[in-house]
Image (tube, rainbow, N blue to C red; front, side, top):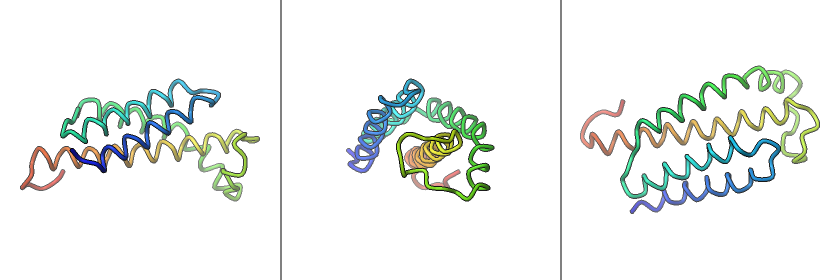
Amino acid sequence: MNWFSLFIAAIFVLFAYFQLNDPDPERWVVLYGAMALLWGAAAFDRYFMPLIYIVLIASGIWMISLLPDFINWMQTGAESIVGSMKAEKPHIELTREFLGLLIVIIALESLRRKARRKQNPGGKIS
């Protein structure tokens, strides 16, 4: 059993839990829940590559759709996005979502590489 993978799974469970009071919790709870399941399975050397790719592609598309708001946030001086949990300006909430998706994509890429290493222990990682 891989304790680091279990730790990452637990972090995503917490992310999903904290989304329950969000105005749009459904898609975030599903996304973070899927991440928790994928990392939990990885703790036992189980990898579901099709699901990893589906979540990676969907997260990438979602993130690209938020890119204009992230750019707007950067152009307006990159004001604090953590001062208040209630976002007064739409681009602040969308920037938070953009960064949440960035975390998901980084974690998925790490998971994909981990799965590849497991499948090809002596070879080069693609």
